[in-house]
Amino acid sequence: MQQGQSVYVGVQNLIEFWSVVTRPPSANGLGMTRMQAAAEVDRIEAFFPLLEDSPAIYREWRRLAETCEVSGREAFDARLAALMLVQGVTHILTFNVEDFRRYPGIVVVSPNDVRAIPTQP
Image (cartoon, rainbow, N blue to C red; front, side, top):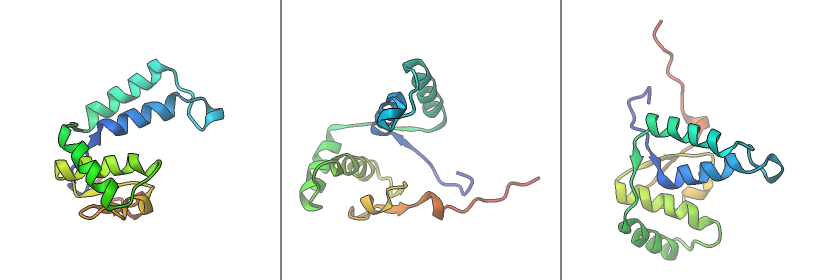
């Protein structure tokens, strides 16, 4: 954002976030209550524009699932890729760099590759 880029969040991102933060730590979650999760989602929604879902996303997901040989849990990443392609979003910032390289038209950016811009005093 400091570099002038627009940053968005998808509905699926918020659903997956909720899933992770409300799972107990013993199940690789953060153990937040539903109220805590709701407060965090409110903050995210206030900060980032939301990319809306549409029927076109399913059609694009289906195309990607077949042409990019998607199976199992990869289907969730394919859905994010479909959302991006339908909404005209070209770059994804993700720790799962290798999982998104298969999708044509999407530039994958690792958080480690983003340079911090020094702030002005």
